[in-house]
Length: 267
Image (cartoon, rainbow, N blue to C red; front, side, top):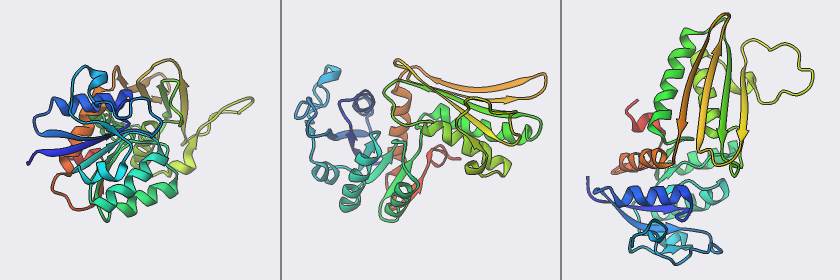
């Protein structure tokens, strides 16, 4: 593989810094762009400054220029920003790795349409471990297809703006697909007051937002006399960055298409 030119969105944030650091330490990648909003206090600073090194790349708000100068753009921002970056990538024929969550169905359709022009890896969670967990959930759901209540519990830092997390919803979709259910019909997102007994063939979701929790997800299969829990806990953001870098490399040489982390991992 030729040396891959990679740009990072939200470069001064915690996830952006983790990505910049991973690119710095990967001999197959070159950091060629770093994006931030126009009012960001780190605009025009070196992208490596917050990490204690000089990257030679200044943080910019010029989306078009950054996209044109890169082979792949990695985005872990917010839906409104990601869609702007998507337009720029389509115009410049730049591949895209999207780890942003909270998209509406209509916005997901825009991304799917864009994938006919450029190659995109989109996943609610880029962690290799989480995507292994998704495979385990499929196996568990098939084996525990009756007599077990299913609940998904997730926890994130207090600054996360969407709930349930994209990863929690992805877990629900993996379980529902394995059981032949439609998640839209079987999901329960809120319980308050007199709810009555739990309905069979449903998937419940519970959300915690507190402190600086990076990300914790647990699927519970609760039967009579036993409970199976399948969990993933992230202690820092480096695992998400490593997965995103792997996704960027996966896109090298591809002309178009919409992929997920299961494709990246060979699933």
